[in-house]
Length: 326
Image (cartoon, rainbow, N blue to C red; front, side, top):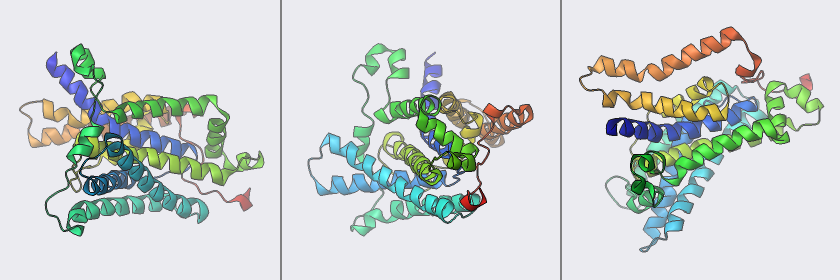
């Protein structure tokens, strides 16, 4: 039982950054924008939080617990917003190819993260690797009664606030899509922007709004990883391919934020499953690590074969909108 609890906890911890990224990408794709730059945005969200936290810790000898959280959080959101605005300007205003722009943004974001992660200390005459222990401790603060409830408390209440924030955002996003005028307008923009435009909906505004909000949410996944999981430490390329897994979850969850919650935890569990299975050879570990992508392909094939409209991506996904062609 103890081992099962530890596996479930590890799956949740691994799944939280995936949930941030998947929720952000779902919001973006609902507007018709396919942002393959999410992995790069998550890197920038993480390193922006590191930079903000480092500058604050360096500026004071007695850091305030509230500011230890607020400054990296705002820094992460700002960095992610800037990346999202770059993508939005290129694909919405200039109508650049969304696939190419997204891939370029990912390459750029990873490069930015690795550059500042590897050179931030040297810019201030210091050596070593970045380790924001005080900031990481603030982000990892759990509910005071978590461990007094035994296995139940450890499984459900032993995480930092960002873990619960990811779940809340996914639930709220689902409600907005299905219960509010803003959500319905956004979905109409993703399905048929010409019709939405004719109905008086500002297509450009909704696309910018969804892409930027989605990017900022995805950036929090990077912040969670470096502040909560790695305890305020940065390692170049340490985030791995989790950004691509987040995009895969969008397909697995059939573009529904609330389905992204169990999907993210499932993918998180599959991602680290090989660690808990003794005696595996290297090829067996790689085969297990491939499971999330294999499952996504199976789901995509199944959904496409059934052709149910509610389970398919937005009709205008990845297509630029030219108003003069309306």
